[in-house]
Length: 256
Ligand SMILES: [Fe+2]
Image (cartoon, rainbow, N blue to C red):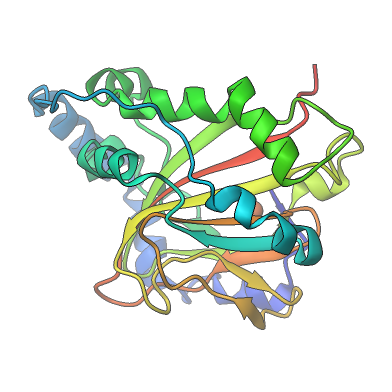
């Protein structure tokens, strides 16, 4: 959930601003029916045989010092080549995703039928398992040491974005959490994208006034890691012809 949004940012998203996006949201139900139909008609994909273990490259550890000093870091080549290749190959088509529903986070996110998608594309489940594994938790402790052991990414999000998609500049609501305020770390894995400016790379802003501190321009096999409790983030409307596929999650101390 987003907090700390400036009033002038909210205005940008009030109708008649962002009219195309408002229209898309209005016809959400129709788009959902259409996507459900395509899902129903989709044949079972023929997956290439494979034997891979999901992991991240050592570039994670290489970015630890920068993360420690500035609270965020951008890493390239985050998945080993063979892993990245399979993620791209098995990335579900657009109709697996819910159409845009929220003007402040206007991109396709969450699977319409998560079980069906995971069954067809096992990479989805494998990524979730890795990010909630003890192995990842240990690497996270090495990357960002903390007395709070056991931080994991419980909920992994998959999304796709294109022309005019955007995310309002905000802080995450974890900024108000007693347990996770200083422990929560956001991971944004860019799987594949056109790249360049205004191509859906999550930006780090100086503050709520929206001056960009950093904008990722390589959105293929890269990763932005940042503290979402005290760093403003989001991305401005994407330019025509741009797209990006993303995996995201908050590494947090489990609350139970
Ligand atoms: Fe956020």
